[in-house]
Length: 355
Image (cartoon, rainbow, N blue to C red; front, side, top):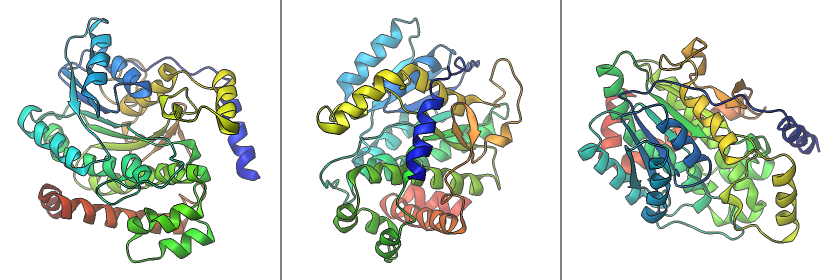
């Protein structure tokens, strides 16, 4: 009940208007936004495009929809947006994106926004890589993708000391509803490999389907914090996670009937942010405190490892900041790095060199 009340208050806070989108001069910089053909990702890419970056890469699983998004950006006057294929339900696709970036990316990457996600699935589905689709698309693949992009971002920091590259993982305030701290979760997830257990049919059947999306939101917070802790020892890259709030989103396009469909219909009309409004939080997470930002001057270091909501640094859930949560964070980091290293030698070399 306490969590229901907390979620209600969070929705009511959305009645307060958000600040205008943060502005910056991104001249010469390269930006990648995943899931950028629609919704928050597209609106974020469009905002970035108005800040004169060298290139904005819209990483999408559909080339056709991505090209349609690019044409919309072209109509705003920006001509350097590109579509690159990226399907997070396939680790092969994640690696193919990294292969292409090595050949065509030019060695520079200033901003990476890991935004792509899927909505809760009513039935259990696994990817060909063997993981629950919700967990892989929303958490595992973004983590894997960021590890493959990191060498380019470290190189950018070294060659362009005037900029501190930034990685943003899109999370959600619903991470507060995660079940990772429940007795059932502790029993199932105590198995040797945490990620395998989290992706199992056994665990799926124990929980309401939406919980797995909430759990993936916690994992994104965990990975952002764990990665930042390690990067802070040797480079200025900023990593954070962000809750864009409850937004009108194509993610719920499959939920059109029944009680949940009616509830979302009502919430969309009463309290939801538009996709453009929600994207402002992604832009804030990517730019706040940076030297490129126009206007207010802030200490950029306070955004390292931070969790942001409605363009403010916010507190994570009680579990995420507990000792048990911090232990699980390290478990997730270790398991994720092992998966990525076994899958791609580039990650193995990078981790051995830097971590």
